[in-house]
Image (spheres, rainbow over the protein chains, first blue to last red):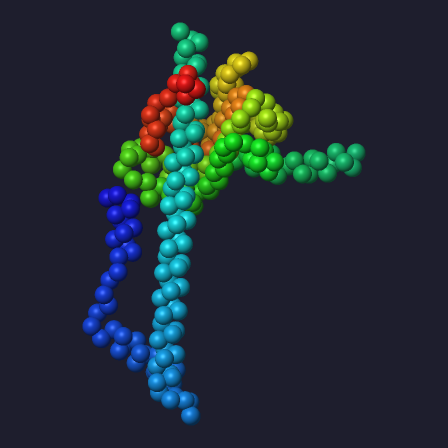
Length: 100
Length: 173
């Protein structure tokens, strides 16, 4: 498969399963324990959403950076092989021309 | 005497490295600044294997397999607007690293055009390293490939990677 198509497929937006957000929020509330005294429940939920958004942003950034590095390495490899093959090929041509 | 000893100590790692097919290519920053076009590729084994996975179908399987077996590809190539803009001592420094384990297999000398030297480091039936020095009046290229290289296969790759077979004369037309 074409590399661009593979990457598009990997990075395609996928909908979470039903009830995913509720499960995450419930887990956040469990992990954070009961709300601190005087801290409204809405504030805790808001904090949970922010943490989730930050984690998602970090994952997207790191994933994008990894893809960028890999594609750059691929392009550099192609360029390096192109130059090398050209040099070896030309040297072989000249050697053959002399030995004729 | 002390200076000689220090020089020997400094030279030792480079020579030891060259035993493994790898050489040190020291290019002054001013050279790249002077060049009209420059290419600096430094890919170690891990990056090569990663990049090889992302090579698409325009390369044949053999080429991909060859790349996967390599431990590094290092290419430095500079093109200049005028003749003689680079210091040829850069090449001497590379040659100095190639000890007796390296064999010069090709030398193409031409006073006005391209001079090419190809060195390889044999390891049993295979090659563990390859160095190509190409010096033209307006172009300098140094290539170091670390790992098992098949020269014929390598030459046959010309025409792949999105470029046609090109002769020197065609290139300068």
